[in-house]
Image (cartoon, rainbow, N blue to C red):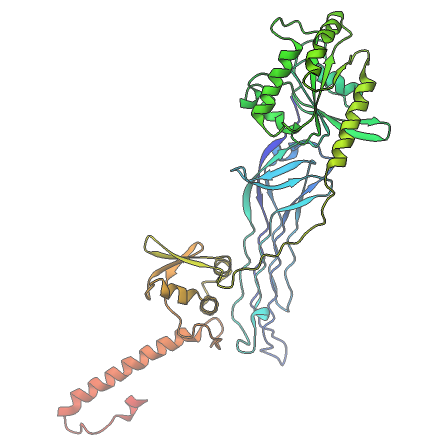
Length: 482
């Protein structure tokens, strides 16, 4: 059973932010010392880091669900919550991170390369942070923001300079075993390699890596055999080497037809047409193999490809082959452009960009935007003062004005994020306000007060009408006035 895994589906969840704390300092002789609720800690991130010591995605195959630590909640006495623990996942060099739809998020090449795949949620602010000159003692705090949750696909594409391609049992594993210290499975019976093998070759002052890809067969690019699963491992190579079995006993095969069949699969896979080719006629230690190699050498060289006759068993011709590979790799590296310095791209938003949109869907006014949705998630809807604070923030952002322009009437259903409510325009939208009792919004109390005053005035007028025909109707009941 193989332990090599080069493609996994990973479910990642960053840590949630801690809730803010609503607290009032109470000490001896200072019963109301002011707000002292601390902020919640941010949730931990999930980060991928390239580790040269990791060569497979096997760990994620058995543990596909990963989660970073949550942030701790704030506490009184201005104590902020602890940050959530970041989760660092070590991946092999050449790991490609993409969405389930195939969109590439990151291509991790080079030791130490990092990518934050999921960001932790923000911590909620405590009432000490929310206090200002008008709101001196807020009776509420913000909830922590949930961390990002997403599903990603990790796909390994080996980082090698030379890729060996050919039919099964062509001698690729034997060749890489004598060129490097790699020890793939080798036997005296027909079989195909099940996993890619990487080896490091040292030639004079040059060092390069070589990859042995599982054997290809006709139709590999369309899913037959193991070719489609492992063709990705030669995408990054600088040179492709056709390893041809000149001693095959299959009457329907010969070196030229084998090369044509492999080239057809490489063309169908795509993206490899610009790679230089070398042809290795292997197994010339067999008399029939040496004779066949000499017969087809001229036809292959006519294509402009260098041809090397070698024997992995007797090491004949390997020295010339390794020096030729080192030369091609060296030329490829010299032709590469120098690495560019890290650039920070700043894209300012448009002048008229409000940061949100309002759309009507099924008679519901839907507000979309990063800030409105985050504010709704962080609001404690069990606290009237927190609701009033949210209403003011939305009004200052221009959400209420946009709703009015979109045709929303008081009582119309409005959805922001995952919460839906009836829209009631605020009276003091866009202005700071001074709350009444802790946990309440005086605008709500003012509405009730106005309603009560209107009821009392209507009742007083009714009594005056009833008493107009009675004796003493011109007298006023002072108690009713109060």
